[in-house]
Image 1 (tube, rainbow, N blue to C red):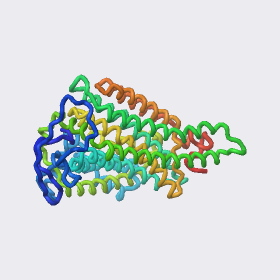
Image 2: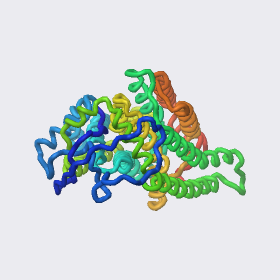
Image 3: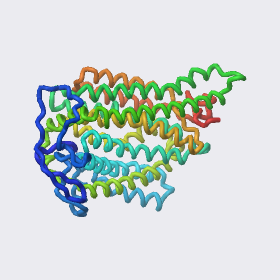
Image 4: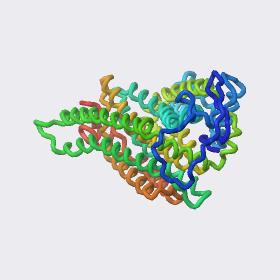
Length: 476
């Protein structure tokens, strides 16, 4: 059952004050394939914020513990409920961290697993809250809150980075790995799941073109500092030293980060203000195509207050697991022989994106392909245009040399992945073959990154560029 399906006749849950209003769903012209930016929607929203005709209506107000835990456990689909079975790992992981901190592998493994149910509940609560808002505002808010898991991990890694414990390479790999996981793994599984029940699925060009265009710009911006460093690394001399090159690369990364943040703000204005009604109409039509819409209408919902409580609890658990997980990364990389590139590119993104992936795949299965596509592209855009620049700027403020000088291997993977996905999205249709190919490409990347040597052995973005070379990110 999709987490985002519309009821055809429903009462409005205004949150705690229990304001209810009835409105009949406006009928759309079936023959119109291209929505217009029409702002004339009388009586669609109450107080300009909450939707009247909403799938998020609960029929209750306030907080009811029994209903709260029952709704959280059931989730929106069978996969979500199965993931919630893992909740006992959350207290077990916290207990193991304090009781036996010497068991590094167990602490890492338990907290790695514990992040999945916590992130799943966080994603579910964000989705419930999003249904009580205008469609595009709700989806953007849901995506932003879902990206908090990634942002928490990045900030904890950045806080723990020292010259003796260099974690910036893991952050860089995690940023690109997050984009690759969304573009190849998540989108591929969406195409595959949706293609199993039908010959092909059609999505709107407004969603795909805006998403791929922004990703190309973001990929170009992330590529420039790495290209700059690699192009000049072999031309250094006494007048233009490696230290100068490293400092210039760091400065370029900071300037690029500010520019990418401007691009992100422009993207928000486009989605939430100037062209918001276009996306509203696209997603309304997607809701009408939901094959489980009648079941979604009958499913119990969280109240506004319960959504906030669930978000706070799950976010707290995710943050604790992230802190405990990051503290063990150094041991896993050095003692267990796991490459820091594999850790950041594959392992970290998989656990932080688990909830978003379940949401998108469930939507594709229910034929809500535009929602699924948005949930694949929007987090990638958020990572490239917001989280990566924020990591650089926060590192700047804390005098830590976080930059955008990625391994050339990773940058090439990112650009090629954007081009591959853009080619698949060009015709506005998807099938299970395209989904299978995307997933297989991701598996190839995972196998290759396992054998990619750690930065302490060799690196394409290091000052010495060989054994024991110090990363250019160190700023020395």
